[in-house]
Length: 260
Image (tube, rainbow, N blue to C red):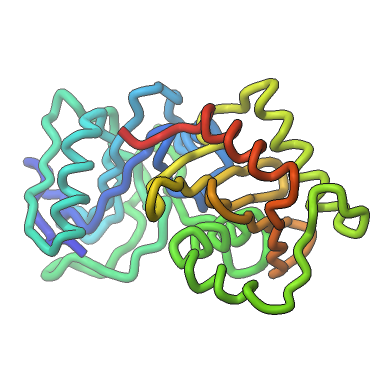
C-alpha cells in the first residue's frame, strides 16, 4: 500500500489508485469497460482513466479521475515494488473528483478523521460506494473469477485428480454449454470492450478473462477453463480441453484487450 502523499493543493491524501481501461479495470464493478464507466458517470473513452482514491483534510472519501493513465500505471508499479511514489496528477489531466470510493479500502490516512462520505453539496452526485459482495451475485462471481486467475496453480491442482470435467457438448451442464455458446458468439460479433481480456501467464500462454450476463470464465490458452455462474452460488465448473476449447480460446485471444 502506498505511503499517503499530498496529491494537490486541495490536500488529497492518496491511499491507492487503480487503472480504468478496456484491458484493466476493477472486475467487481462490472462485466465490461463501458459498464464500469457508466456506473461512475464517465464516458468510455478508449484511452481510459486512472482512479485515485484518497481522503481530504476532513477525512472525506474522494475519487479523483485523471486522464493521465501512464502516471497512475507508474505509481501502481512503484508501489507494487515497495517504492514510494508521489502520485500528483496535473490539474489539466483531472476529469473530476467524485465523492466516495467505488472500492472497499481497509486503510486510512494518518492524522485526519476516519474515512466518511463528504457532506453533500448542491449538484454533487451521490457518493460512490463499493458493490455489495457479501452475498453471491454478479460482484462476488467476478471476484471469484479474479481469485482463480490470481491463484491459477492452486485451482488447477485441485482438478488434477478424479474431478469430472464439463465438456462443451455435455448435456448435463446446461449452464456451461450456454456460457461456451455465448463466448463463441463473441468471435462472430465482438462484445463491448473489456468483456474479453488477456493477461500474462507462464511460458507462452496467456490468461483469458471472459465475462457475460450472469457468468465469468477464466482460462489459460494452453490449458483448461473455469466457469462461474450467477445462478449457481459458489460453484466452479472446470471445463476440459476437449476438441472445441483450444480453438475457442485461440479465437478469443485474438480479439482480447491487452494491457499496454
